[in-house]
Structure formats: C-alpha cells, structure tokens
Length: 300
Ligand SMILES: [Zn+2]
Image (tube, rainbow, N blue to C red; front, side):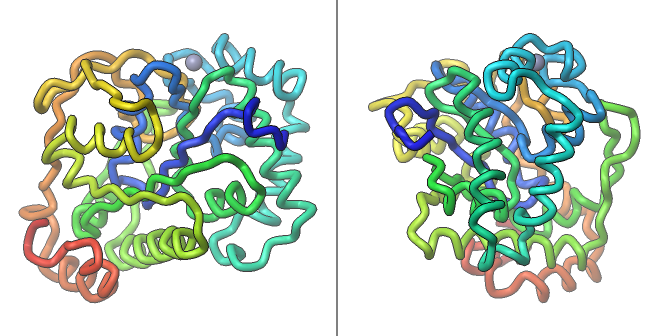
C-alpha cells in the first residue's frame, strides 16, 4: 500500500458538476496506460447496490472490467462492503469536515479507493469524483494523487444545473438546482479545492473555456504537467473534433456513454438562456472567486 513503485498513480478531477470534467476525463482516458474510471465516489451506491450501467453499456455487475477489479481488490463486490464504505463516507467524506477528519476512519476509507485504483492494473487512473472532500481524504492519506481542478464560468454552470436532463441510466431527470444554490456550491467546491492547493497538494487548474478554445494544446500542456509521458500525443483530437473509444466509467455525466466522434464546442447557451435576474444573483454570490478565474464580462 505504501510502496509507491507498485501503486497506481491517480489523477483526480475536481470541481463542481457541469464544468466539463466528464469530457476531460474521456479525452485523457484515451491516452495509452490511462484508465478513466468515472466518479468512483458513487461506485458503492450506484454500481454495487443499484447495479447501474457502466460506461461500456452493461450493468455494473456484468462488466468484466469491474468484476475483475472487485475480485482483485476485495475478493468480489458485496452489498455489505458497499454499506461499510458508505458508512465510512458519511463519517469522513464531507466538505464541511475537510479541516477535521478522524485518522482511523480516514485511512480505512481511503484504503478502499487505493485498492480499487491498484486493482485496475493501469499505470494511471482517472477518478472524476469531483468532490473536494474526497480529494482531501486521498491527499491526507498519502494516496499518490494529483488533482486537476476544473473551473467553468459560474453563470454557464448555473444555466446547466437549471435545465432538465434525463439520466440514461434510468430515464429519470438529473438533479436540478436554482441559481443561488448552484452559486453557493460553485463557491464552496472551488474554495475547498483552492484550500487543498494551499496545503501543498499537487493541484493544477484547467478552465473549461480554455479546453474548448484550444483542445489539443490544452491537453498537451496538462498531460505534460501531470507527467503522462515526455510529449504525449493526442492523435484522436483533430481541431475541434475528437474520437472516443468505450470506457468503463462507473458513474457520471451522460456523456460518459458516448463512443465515436464528438464535437469540441463550448456551450454558451447561458448567454441567451440565463435570465437577467439569475445572472445578477450568480454574479453577486460567486464574487470574488469568479474574478480570480477570469470570468468578468458577459461571456468568458
Ligand atoms: Zn464496463
């Protein structure tokens, strides 16, 4: 567990949902030796207990990749195991508890994730769980993790959370938030990830808008910073088009199921779609962090 030479390196994608983490995960996951795992924080509830679909399109228990990971890590997935980890999660993995976490529970909780990462057999895994609190648990426990902090204009994020989106897993609508709630979550998650960087953790920040403005260049710079090879190539990205293969993402945005050609275009529908009152509210509630990331005018 503590031998870094034999453990898997973890790239943890942090940030508030609807900030482009699923897209970034899929793109980085196309690199050789890199496995995109999706939002591992939801594996216990949605994968093991609810038996939702893996990114490859089959239910979690039927996915050969995850079955092998479960057997290697825990001798198989069981409801008992999932309930145990969920109980630990309730005790230690909370944003408001980032500053004070019990050591014994924390080590046990982080160990469950380390066992999963190592059992994939991949050189590098991507966990797009997003929550700053899990990133903090992993960093504090000594997991070899580098956090990619993804930010997006909070007005675009607020617009996205206000829209009705169907979950491909079960056809039910995804959670919707009003602009005030989104703005508060946006500030809380980003501030917590900033705190992590301030404590000396490996954290690198990427703006959704920069990724979509220059996909290949942004990916190359990021991959170099993350040590994913001396000069990682992205032959599956040409201009504003990318080609994605299947992945075994355990949970996440509906985009995780997409295979084949994808257009890399910035979604600016908030500029016309977000009502003025909501825009003013989000502007007020996300200041000054919004300015720190360069989101000043009517569009970034
Ligand atoms: Zn799968």
